Length: 499
Ligand code: BES
Ligand code: MN
Ligand code: ZN
Image (cartoon, rainbow, N blue to C red; front, top):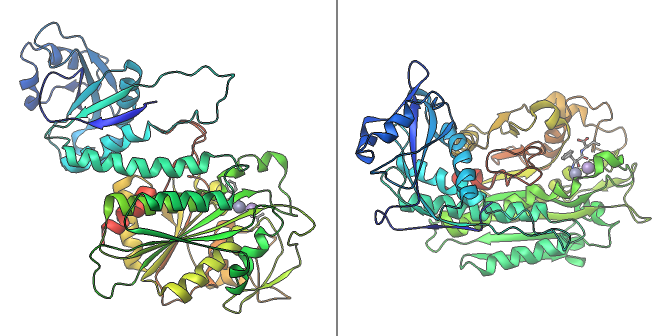
């Protein structure tokens, strides 16, 4: 872990560490790129690159022990894989062990020398900034007096031609937004209530001059007929609220309709009366990651991207709890677009709050498009594990842009289908539709099919089921085990940047 990361001036005195990228050679061995020879007047670095353990495989880390004329006291050679395969994904994998090593060695500054490749230096700098920034996430926030604290080092990153200052700063800025989102997801549910999330949104907005926040709660929610949202939240003493953020560009494109980002923000999911078994309940503090990551994306948009199009963020925040006031299986709810829903399972609560969010977005925001993010189903974890988020989007243009953004940021998506047959599965004998077909077929797709009843076909819409990717079950690069990933913060920021 790192305490903080700074960007230093280019050039200057010898840094404590220099990181040199090496490609994997044809025979499996690495070699020092000819352009790097300028750093190595004694030939000691080249010698290290020829050592057998220096394979050049992605993330392979070898420390050179140069005797003289060294570019720094510590020289790390990091494998970048085959030059022909090298790109954003390989650098992201390669940089994680470097960042962790430099955090462990506590070197006070470091410089990166990457051989020329088809990866734009701006992209490289951003990836380096993001990696070091993500390492500053404080996973010890809730440790108390029974844990002895460690001191974490601060590092200064010195820019080079292959990792320029502005791009490192952009990466660090995105990591700040991402770490906010991760912290909200990490915060225990006795603290992170809907009201607490509203306060966090207000605090975030105060730090910008382009974000404003409105919180809709109580009688105002009733007036707005937020039927699903109110019902899901009504058993909890922590009342539900809709947190609406608006990013107003300083210089807006004339007549631009807003992009709407919508996040499932269930601050705790007990399952409600259809209660979860205890081994499935633990971890459900993370059921607000859709909203947390949406808020993180709004922060990134306001602080890093600063686009000239308006963006609205909607967080439907509620706690799915249990009491005599809880909504029940067999209840029928009438949504604001007139659709009636028979509740078959109170644990399929995410789609009920999102349905209201979609109706609200369409009726009140006149959106250019809507992108929702939700830890919606366990089924998407069964299908895609922690590698991809499920993506549903029938609009080719929107999907193309989301997929392009995903390729840039490494937050990977896999398309799943919408089809009339899945909408049929949601039909109810009693109301229009049910919230979950008990047969559990095509479970994550059912969720998307349910949501499709709450938005017109004419509005480009993308649904992202992030249940499998919101949390790191094992250490994933620079993301520590058992911490939220902030999945989607950078993806949505890059998407908005591409408009
Ligand atoms: N929040 C859960 C989905 C989830 C499961 C997220 C595991 C992260 C990890 C969601 O509200 C839920 O309970 N879904 C159920 C619905 C079912 C009972 C109708 C599911 O997917 O099993
Ligand atoms: Mn649930
Ligand atoms: Zn849930």
